[in-house]
Amino acid sequence: MLRFFTAGESHGEALVANVSGLPAGTPVTESYIDHELWRRQQGFGRGGRMKIERDHARILSGVRQGHSIGSPIAMLIENRDWQNWNESLPVGEGDPAKHKPVQSPRPGHADLAGALKYNLPEARYILERASARETTARVAAGAVAKQLLAALEIEVLSHVIQVGGARLSRPVSFAEIRALAAKDEVLLNCADEESEQRMKAEVDAVYRTGDTAGGVFEVVAHNVPPGLGTYANWDERLDSKLAGAVMSIQAVKAVEIGDGVLAAASLGSAAQDEIGYARADEPAGTLHSEFTKFTRAGNHAGGVEGGISNGCDLVVRGHLKPISTLRRPLGSVDFASREPVKAAYERSDVCAVPAGGVVGEAMVALVLAAAVLEKFGGDSLLELRRNYMGYCEQLRNY
Image (tube, rainbow, N blue to C red):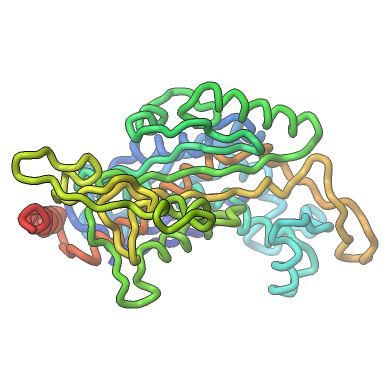
């Protein structure tokens, strides 16, 4: 069973990611993990924190000579900003006068709800763990899952389809999304240049007014075989696991699989993906050519039907609300006096949608890697691949 957890705070000494259940013999390289961490830090509209951090995952256990050995993988990502906070957030008692309280909770953040839940007098410790800085560790864990999936030729990537009111104006291919991930510079991670410039204009506009912009990222998993997940029990459905994983990302307020939103307003005859079959003397359908001769006329379902992957590209969209920390703060209440004040301001982003997409990739990869191991098993990569290839042969002969 593939499992992961993270630990650490936004301004703490380090973040920790732990991944267990990875089959022995899986290639795991720090350079690949670091590149994924770099991708998370990119994008027009990121805040000053990204100028401080140079995220690097140091693997402490579970990997030797570049391959997993079957034991849990622990990774440490140091926070460079810790040097500015070590006296404010000491592990020991420290000097209370150097503490930096968050005295007025920010609307839209976990500040108030968290302070009420944990009976804390202000929101500093809520902010520290609830912050999206935690997703750095998730991306490190997701990079490990991606390397397992890559051994089965499954790819997971993302692109941005909307920022503010500016939306991607045309369909894009997976090859175009792959080309985005290979770029040395990232603007808003949109595959269409004209659409990306309109998105940039949205970010420029909100920056000038002290506001923030949300948007929509799309994660696409390519070459996913049919048969992952099941309809047998509600909590085993692949789509429910994917939705929960992407919804867990900070500031994501809605998740869509395939054309879910559009389908709700469509007729049934237009919302389904008609099925065909390529005969022996015909080429297999492009959507299923690697697995079966059954074909689809489209992919409205986003690669999942009845809680099971169907062999089409898996498409998951995360709808990211605007960041709740504003340079032009909204109204709030002081924790101590209960008097009306402006909400606290912490250094933050203007737009984090491209970064949200990279985190979305990590979460989708972790769900898919777990589903792959659940279906095919294997304590070593060799055993997993043997089981997987046997299943693929079964599909071809169906």
